[in-house]
Image (cartoon, rainbow, N blue to C red; front, side):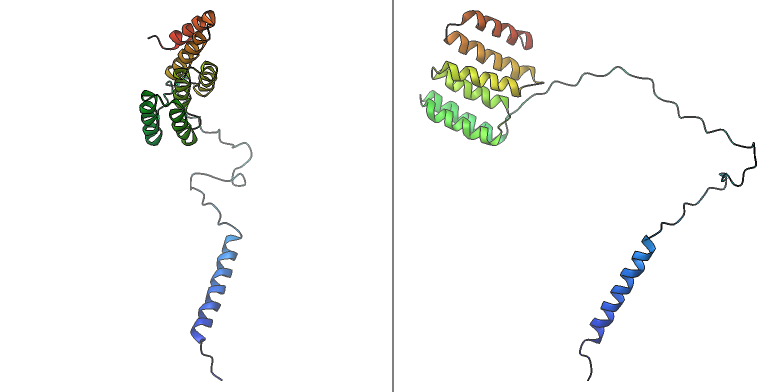
Length: 182
């Protein structure tokens, strides 16, 4: 009886043979060629060791540069939500504005600018304790960004003043002005 697929079987056998040949060639890498000027230790006679080549000159050490301050920005979606929240605050709907900022926080949870925005909404609504907490949370995320840190300290100062803790508010204002004078 004649086989219907002799070509397929031939290709399968050829593929297995090529795979085996490739595997056997990978078992030992080819030796590195030696340059004519280099000689192996067996070719050198006793006492004829060559000195090592001179080391490449190193550049002089430089003073470590100070990294540029970080600056947080809002993404496009978060920026649109913040603009929407500002309109809601203007309309007096603080709860909806806070919910809108919280939606932005689900997009960028580590962005201190959003925590400051949420704190401002809480502060405007007269919720000074939560506003203080939002400012401190923003401060924790704002490492490396003096502008964001200053804004967080100003929010903290305002919330402290709202609770009549004026001495602490003055200290928070000093910290904000040290970071970014107004």
